[in-house]
Image (cartoon, rainbow, N blue to C red; front, side):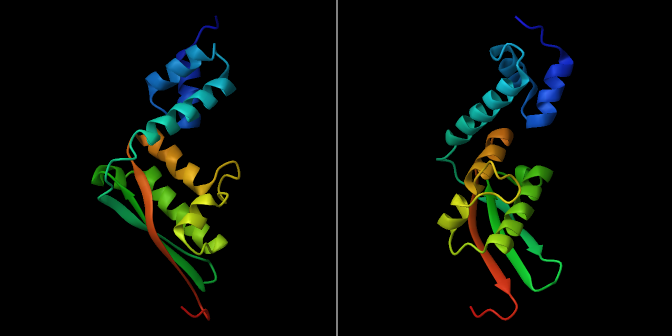
Length: 155
């Protein structure tokens, strides 16, 4: 069995954002194989997110993005369970990325948005992107609504 060092745990933690003990368990289960450990952390994070689906998301924030030409913009309401998580930098970054997704891909409704390939990670859909952060942070997150505006488009 491969010896797992604190450096290995630190490297996996930096790559995944998972908790220290989760990283240690994944590396142990993967017998030191970094790639396999990453996959285990991701799978377990998504499973942790699925367990939280019945919780309410009464906190959150409005993410926004205005394209550099100033002619297209989006607002997105990203919900979470607590104000503490709503102030988390990763949560804020996700809200901004979602607004950018909406500007770039112009989804017509929430269902379409959730099934789109993420413009920030082609290996994930938008729904998987939200679930991944939910699993990493340990709190339910959901896109509640969004709006996209473009100069010259009618409502």
